[in-house]
Length: 142
Image 1 (spheres, rainbow, N blue to C red):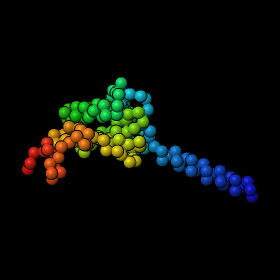
Image 2 (cartoon, rainbow, N blue to C red; image 1 turned 60 degrees about the horizontal axis):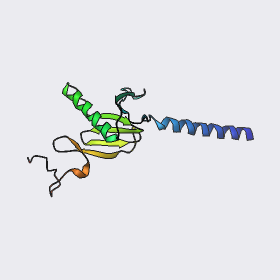
Image 3 (tube, rainbow, N blue to C red; image 1 turned 60 degrees about the vertical axis):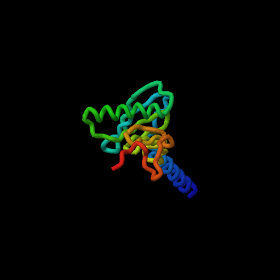
Image 4 (cartoon, rainbow, N blue to C red; image 1 turned 180 degrees about the vertical axis):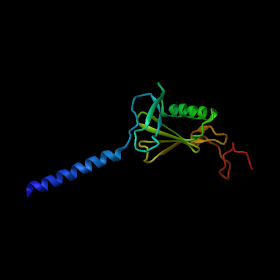
């Protein structure tokens, strides 16, 4: 009887361990100073493709700038993907029309880091001047 209880407890622990590993998901590469572009698999089941974009990047913001350059270059060549995912030293970088966000996982919480100015450039959110009504100064009136 004791053996069955111990076996059931061991199986339960094993199931929890395997479940935790399955939920952990993809981790961002941690190599210092290397900026990566992450391409998610279309089927959603395969591992994402991770390519080196730039080396010797001193900060995550520099990596975000390299990814933004790459995104704009692809768009100028006729591409239509406006969102991009990258990675830098264990964090993921998400670039979209709103700006740049950082996150530890692909699906978890994201920290808003850079916003778009009225002309589309990226800037630190506090650096953007706004009118009294909250509109960015660089946006042309309608």
